[in-house]
Length: 74
Image (tube, rainbow, N blue to C red; front, side, top):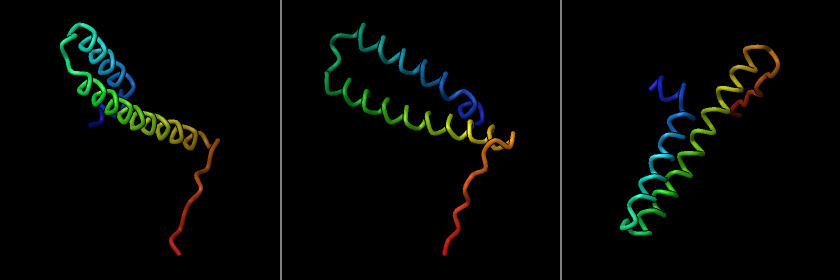
């Protein structure tokens, strides 16, 4: 899991490239399948973005440039 978290963007890019090539070179694939995979890719992109944002915030917090707001339950 650590490898996937450290290289989430690279893994995502490879996955999208393979899916695009598969869709291009296999014209007999049903369009509903391609649209379903496209929706899943968009969802995965959102997850990758959140991982990268968390890594950026951790780095900024470690340098002291940003202090995260703490939320407390009342």
